Amino acid sequence: MLTRSDAYVSTLTAYRYDGPAFGEAAQAGTGAWIRMFLEAVQIAVEQAATFAEELGELRSDRDQRLTRHRQARGTRDRPRADSAAARLLGLLSEAPLVTAASAERLLGISFGAANRALQDLAEASILSRKQVDRKTTGYLAREVFELLTIAERRMASTHWDTRQSVPNRPVPARPA
Image 1: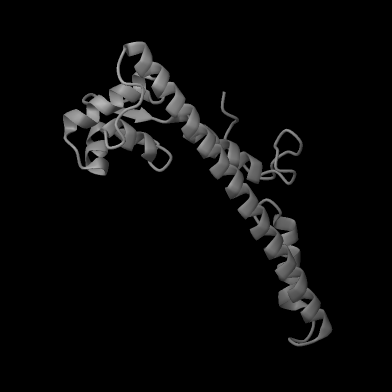
Image 2: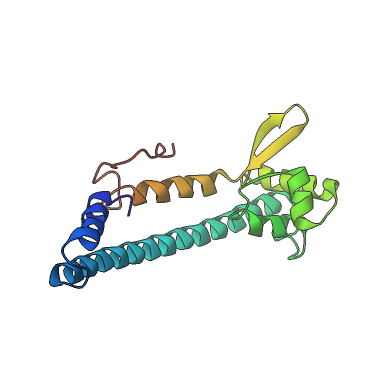
């Protein structure tokens, strides 16, 4: 609704102010607002489905990168399903920024096991390291943040693509 704020405001105004509460104008205004609201819901659902599909594709790509990394290292192709690395990989869409301490809490494992899993995923180019402070390294799933940025940019354009129509509100820059 923020992307199409003009339609939102005009239909809301028609709903609130056009004539007597039960008159034809009020009914028309109510109908216009409900149609606009349902269109916004439909668009939000479509955009959420697109985002979920993109996250699924990203998960598949990360699984392949981890497999290639482990093959190059001469270790088992896939980590055990209950391993810290496999469990953490499954949580990156929900927790795209983690530290060894937060991974320890999320997974209920030792700090050392969390750190080894993070190192493994960073070496596979799934996570990027970022120094948070002198003693803490953060690990970012940058691609998740990029997908969020792209989704936000899509929702800011009335054509669902900021290359086709300029956003009518501030949005983050397109990922590099």
